[in-house]
Each structure stands twice: as structure tokens, then as C-alpha cells.
Amino acid sequence: MSVTPAKPVLVSDENPKRPSREQALEAVRTLIAWAGDDPERPGLVDTPKRVVDAYGEWFDGYDADAARELSRTFEDVQGYDDMVILREIEVESHCEHHLAPFLGKAYVAYLPGEKVVGISKLARVVEIFARRLQNQETLTNDIVAAIESHLQPRGVAVMIDAAHQCMTTRGVHHRHVSTVTTRFTGAFRDDPALTERFLKLAKG
Image 1 (cartoon, rainbow, N blue to C red):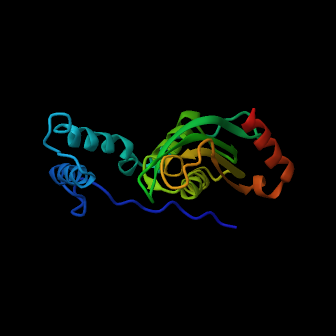
Image 2: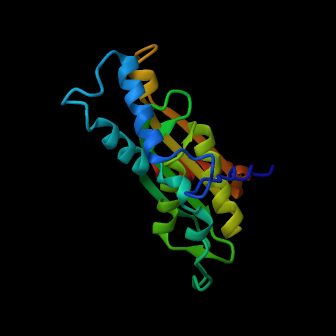
């Protein structure tokens, strides 16, 4: 069972499809007016700038490259062949359906083949994909696909546990509900005992 590659993202300052900053500011002013308020009143006059600046931070994953983060690997692991696991990586993302935040934790593990990568790079990969618009299922798949593609491990395991504000602040208004997604490849998929050990370690 192959892993679906992370979808390409072609966004840059040279991309003619990317609106200008002034167009983005005007879009925020339009939304404020549509909500029923006056974008020119003192309390809101600087809000478009703040929102656009926040979007630049929330979605800077479009301008980052997971492949570059995983490109520096190490081959001398002195015989280590067990899983490498990072627990409770912060996930701050936005769903593509309502642009509402979803916040939670990611748990990432891989079984090294011939290469290992600095552990901070795994956290950075989670951050890069989280700072794009998608759903949680896609985020989980993209993290797995990047690790599979660039490290060629014997297996990858990813679990994300997140609360979605599109569910808690609108619609059904169900609070204290989290969504859990998982993806297992290689040995993690084929060996139930290994999968169980990952889940036990992830839960602490």
C-alpha cells in the first residue's frame, strides 16, 4: 500500500495567482463590512493589517519546503534499529472548509533504515504542513509521505489528536470533542505489536 505524496504547492511572490497585499487588505475590509461593522471606525481601521500579518504567519508553510528540512541525514547510528518517536508536537492549523483553527498534538515515529534525521526536523515537517489549509486527514498523510519519501524508513507511524473550532464555535457546538487520525506504513502497518507499542508510548 503506497503513501499518497504530499500535494505540490506552487505559491510564491512571483506567482501571478497570488493577490497583492493591498488586495488582501481590501478583502478583510470587505468581510468586516459584510459582518455588519464599519472597517473605518477607530477600533477596526488597523484590523486588516493585523489580519493579513497573522495570515502570513499562520500560512507560512506554503513558502517552506519539507524536503529541504529532511535533506540532511546521518548514517552512523551505531546499530540503532528501534523506533524514533516524538510525542506531543504542537499542531496549530486551519481547516480548509471554514478557515477555522484546529489545535492539538502530533505523535510521529519512524523505524530507521539507513538514514536518520535530526529530531527537530521532524517537528519542523509537522509545522510546515500544519501551516497550510487542509483537513486533518490530509495533514496526517502529508507528514507520512514526506518522511517515507526522504528517509526511506522501515516504517512510519503518525497520530494527530486535535480539537476543531469549526465544530466547537459553530454548527453543532460540541465542546471537549477531539478528532484522532492515524497512518501506519511498513512495519508499523504489518506488525500489530509494534503498532500497539507506538500507541502506548504516544499516550505516555
